[in-house]
Length: 173
Image (cartoon, rainbow, N blue to C red; front, top):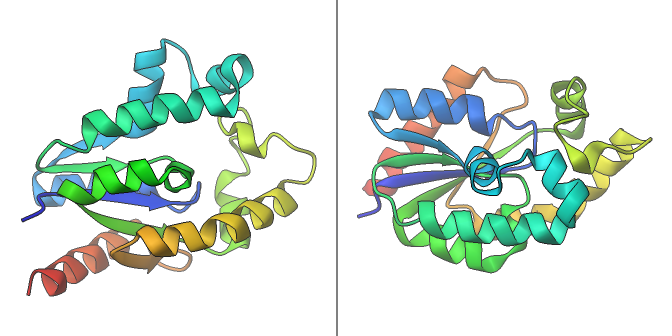
């Protein structure tokens, strides 16, 4: 039986906030993949993107995913682009139930409006258009990867956690 949960989804859908709450409720360890990547690289995500490009970042992401995917009893908040490399999802699927958090483009724009420096892919003049284009491209990847999908647009993080726990119980039976 799978003992871990991987949270996937676009930036601003609540993976980190929900992940911490969910891990606390379930008594599991919380891991944030981007933080692990930063620690391994010895630099921030924006620095990785600037110095090594998105390809360099994705290589680090594959390596970090391989390390965390084998852990038991964890809740892993993954980066928004983790689904772009099938190897990541294949690795996560072995030990994790994969939960995709979604939100409308308007909600994502609102939630990410204050963190331009932290989100290299949103460091563009037309953030709204960038979000819509990235979402449109990634949506099929999220849908293919997810065991459970939950829209976080209009509900609190606590409600998202409750829904995940309900869906996990349904999946068990």
